[in-house]
Length: 83
Image 1 (cartoon, one colour):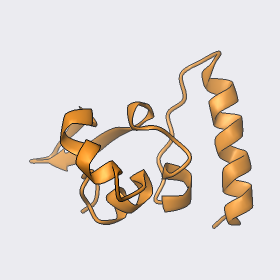
Image 2 (image 1 turned 135 degrees about the vertical axis):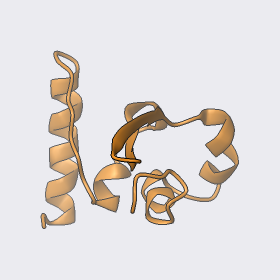
Image 3 (image 1 turned 180 degrees about the vertical axis):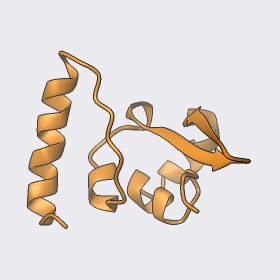
Image 4 (image 1 turned 90 degrees about the vertical axis):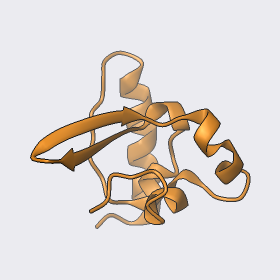
């Protein structure tokens, strides 16, 4: 894996590139997920041999975001996307 500082640099590069084009990335890095906002993240889950895509809901997650970072919520499987 990458050093946490390198992950923050990678996230900056992704944010910069995203102003010009769409970026699609898959990661299991809590540190990387923490570098993004709720609206930046789409969750893809496998259900009955199909991929299900969902956007995260501010309404559902606002109470969680008072106490936890996005990466922590992903790690706890509150966001979904984990087996």
